[in-house]
Each structure stands twice: as structure tokens, then as C-alpha cells.
Length: 354
Image 1: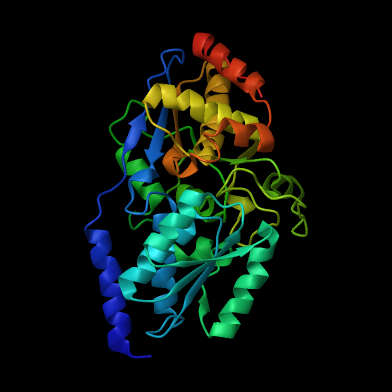
Image 2: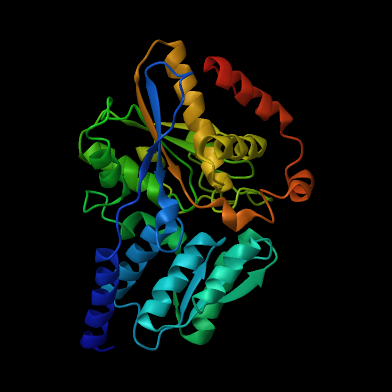
């Protein structure tokens, strides 16, 4: 491995970052909430369209600085889609081949985006098979398995350096309630919640971190039991979040509270949000926002005032064949009318119940 190639690779990634603007913080117009403001950190505006752009950049820099990637490396990642899209982007930037190991159920649009950036998709039958298959491919091809589920929590500088937490608090500086009462985040790798939670503690802030978990994910149960052996036989139906095993990057000790969000609530919320914003978002955003609305309703019931920040993870245009397809919803999620009715009540009086 030549030092000059590594130096050049890092310089390309840093230059790409320098050309990128920060993502927007959107304040929702919710007059039914009295003194509780909700904000969405819009991560869909990254060059590769999702929150995972930050993670992919950090993983590449981490691998380069640790000597794991060289000029002839094939980069391999296990991913349900968005991380793979972003890593395909950075692989192309460095002129490296990229292979994404993913479930066959991954949204078609994500597959197309990975291939657009020159990556290849390697499919497995279920999400619990992606780890071993990625390791096998890396060994066979003498490549590097990025392993986002292990390294997400350590690849990002959680003390600051314009990470997502630092960005949120800087953007909130001039708002009526600049220090949020809650930040709400759903776990995929667990890396983003680890970054946010560590940053809050390091900066000695009073903000609390609530992590919202979808169905068929073990993070919620692990948070309460601390049993690392927990597994789920089914994979999450909310693409990009929820895992069938306890991932190494999920750090329960930095989380203040967890909520289990039904998948029907996530779907109902993205439809509700589309009417508010005039745009489609991914279902993980629905998981995040439903949790934020629950917390806001609780705050209002107690007479508390403050702000809540959560994430708009990616655009709904990636999910036109799934979360915005009524037939797919009927088959995979089922009826979610009860949650639509709950949101209708929330629209009237700001009250939302689980």
C-alpha cells in the first residue's frame, strides 16, 4: 500500500465534504401543540440522499487511516440499502470496486442507485445472512468488509467536528428552545444514536435521547434486558432500521428511553407528514416522527414547554414500490387505519396515544 494513494484518497473525501452544505433543520407547523416545537433534521439532502452519507464517509476515512483499504481493494458491505448507496458513491470517488450484500427484499430504487454509482448487489434470502456472506466474499476476493454494524459507533468523532449532533445543536442555537428536551432517533447500526448520546454527555447537556425501534427488532428488548444473545426470526419491515440481532454499535448506556413503534404507525405517519410537507419520506422517518409526536403529546399533557428534534432519514421516492404502494402495504404491513385515526385526533387536540 502506497502512502501517496492513501493521502490522495483521504484528500478526495475531504474535498467532497468541503463541497457539501449542511442539511436543513425543518420546523413543523403544528398549532395543536402549545409551547412544544418539533424539528426534522433533513438528511435526505446529502449527495446520496440519506443520513447514511455521513456514516459512509466516516467508515471510509476510518478504514483508510487504519490501513484496511488500498488501491486494489474491493469494498464489501452488508446493508439494507442506504449505506450501500453511499458507500458505492465513495467507492466510485476512489476508483474502487464495491459489492453490497443485501436481502432480496431491498427496495428496487436503492438497488438501481447502487448500480448507478458502479456498485454490484449480492442478494441473500434474509437479513440475518448478510454478515456471514459479507465475510465470505471479503475472504474470497481478498477485499475489505466495512462492517458498518461493528464500526459505526467508533468511526465517527462523537465529541464534535461537525457530526450530526454538533450540527443539530448549532442550528438550534437561535430557536425559542435552543436545547432540545428530546432528540429522537431510530437504530439501524446504532451508530447515530451512539454519536448523539455521547455528544450530549460530553457537552454536559440536559437533552435526553429517545431511541424508537420498529417491530421485529431486538434493540428495544435488549435495552431493558441487556441480553446480547437476543435474536429475532423475522427481519424489520421498516427498511434501514431495526435488526434481528444486537449490533455491536448499539450502545444502550447512552440512551435515556426507548419506545416500540408499530409498523402501521410508521406508515400512517409518513402519509400524515406528506400532507404537512408536500413531499414523501422513507418509513424510518415515520418511525422517528411518531415517537417524537408521542413525546410532544406527553410534554403538553404535563404542561411542559420545549423542543424535540428528530431525523428525516431519506426521501420516499426510494420506496414508491413498497411504502407508497397500497398492495405492498396490504400484503406486508396490513391495516393501519387505527393509527391514521390516532393522528386525526392529534391534529385536533395535540393528544396522541400508543
